[in-house]
Length: 370
Image (cartoon, rainbow, N blue to C red):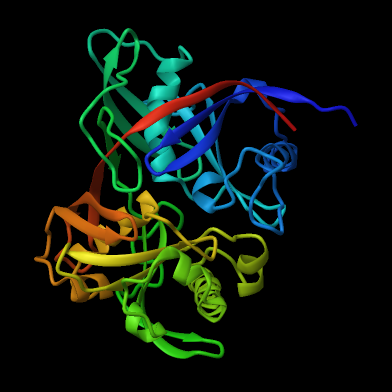
């Protein structure tokens, strides 16, 4: 079969990278059947790859570098563009459309401006994005030069070399992004019976994305392990995967753990937390059952929201004041600062907004072969 190609743009958003497509360039989908897109995305990224390198595609062999964003005209009355996120599994021919990527969200506004999908006057852009995965809005504000994202700035992100212009991201009403509830099980913490491991305490929260929060000591961890060290511990990865799949059923994301193991490989995100002196909380994040080399942005925002709500593991571990806004999270590459706002000290906590600063850059524009 002859190689085919499509117009694409390769971008960094925060600590992740993704292939960006205009929706008009992709096959028209019939209903919920994403197979035509799945084939293109897997081939373009180089998945599946049992060696976890994606050498035959644009992916980088880890979840943060195996992502796709599809941008099109808005279907929401308040939005400037629609944005569909796709997580391409590295080792399996699976593409996930449940949930969003916060880091890649940072690149959507600049991409829309770069492609002429939105117009701006003056030296600042404000783009309202409709994330079709979660049916939530995201607002991005950033400086502009010559009609594009400003190329220079002083915001440095731990995990990204250099500095760039800041992109202000706001996620209004982020609660229940996938399940419709901040606490899908109705509890702020509960016991999780992990097959072959026993019982551990857990918090399951859905703010920006479903997130499973666990405590490092329950898994024999100090909490300061490197990503490479975590990745080499096969037994740990199996236990955390079992916990994730069980949590997926308890949160109502799937009907059975086997479905999460086979089809929903990227959710919930898993946060293994511990105390530290350098930030409000320390975390080792896991995405698609692999240790993240920084932190998924949506996971960090969910963790910040959990830390502000009494009764959660994050609140107990971080020992922060109820309703605390700005929140510093230590991860494997440094520290990430996010903010969560809302009414937290009430029976049914309300998260009104999460915010964060990110950077982004256009890396390449051309055609990708598949």
